[in-house]
Image (tube, rainbow over all chains, first blue to last red; front, side):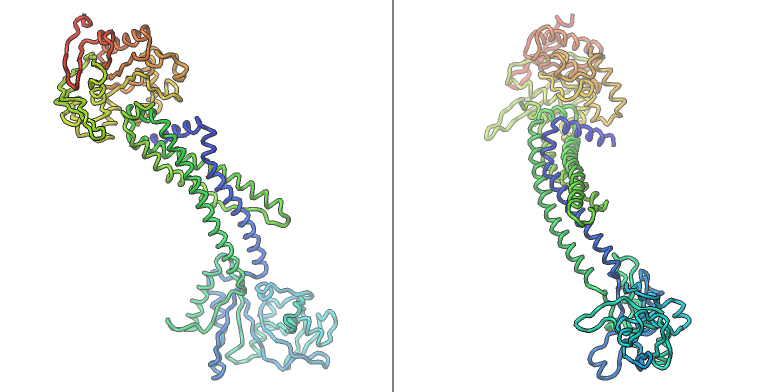
Length: 406
Length: 229
């Protein structure tokens, strides 16, 4: 430690003796690091803002579906999810957040005061609105107790209200679904049309009510939407879910899945791809700028070794070993480069913050600590790598020649 | 203490081989005060470099304090220089950016000595050469004589076996030269072994023994009776 601290203070003294030169030498490293930190801080700010917005939109939602091919439909051997699969997902897979099964219920249509219509009848639970991020505009959604108590309540889409000419506020009205009466407790926000089809022509009822209407029918048309607790882990949770469901469905190893777990949206994937490309491009820029900066440092260190030939001769005469000299010059190069890196980090942060502030609606810049650590470590490493040639030149000087040098 | 047996040094300069030392046998004992004289090109510098362990001989043996140095590696030689040899050079060779104290402390850095101990010894050495009040001065704030005193303090701080001075007064006026030589006389009187390489008879006259080198050979080795008296 003693040895290093001596070499350290010697290196510092030598850099301090040529302040302007040291600064100019490290400018390459400084600018490179500053550019990287600025861009990374902007990118990270943008990324975290997009991720959080996306997460609000249910971006972390996965869905579990049964898979059927043409052959299944022809033969009538239709694959379906079981209620066990839902429970496995809910209780056996770590990282799974909310689970909302959605089951299509067969019915003989919906009637209200003599009018009737045939909307999609879906049975689900209280988690639906959170998983899908869809909410009621009036009234309330299906609650847990509705589900547990198998209450005959319904939440309708706006199209159903319009088709049945119900009051603008349909809460408290009764609908006849199949042969049972359901009380309307809520109405969902209007979704509008996609390709001319209304997205609001549906009725939601408690999941257990749906089960009892379906009776003993074993192949319900069902899919399960679920969220992950940590968006970053979406891939891992997906794999875990697959494994758990395979086990629950007793699929032998080597056999294909008869179900699939999909990301509700491929947006996350695309976004990660974009940031991945941006990072790769950045890494390239960093590489080039650090290379240039490193060559600059090597150049000046070689000049410095020549300049200080006599000093090196003196130190050798006084008993400095090759290693003593090598350590001192390596440390000097590393310190020079690290100094540039540190100034670059500060400068980059300021630039990033400034740019984010100037552009309207741009999210604030963010830099993860590991990026700062990496930038600092990397700049020091560049110093060491490019310091090797000058330092070993210094270390291998012949003391007699060096002492005679003018 | 210093024992040279058949020491030969050859240099290769391109195609040519220069014979700098042609077989030197020499013994210098503890607490001797020796002048190494000879014209330029005589081989006395080569001899000094070999005695100072800055270089190794082509042939022959150099036994320093009972240890054969011929087979030592570069780093082992560095360690020997650090412990056994105190150099004083013609042009002082102080580190320009460091203070007198830091200059004197420098050899002890390579001994891995604790900073407080280094400082204590360096202060002592500077006091010994009469510069106890110039600790924080840089070389350019000191006169030539003072600079050479700092160099002597640096040579002494590690308590070396040999004080090896190469033309120590070559850059000094005659009055300052006399002061430096008086310092050497004192050190010798205190038991220090001193070897001075010089071409000035006045300087050689201070020493108790004169070794003359010419054409790579010792041609004269006499006791200086006048100085002894």
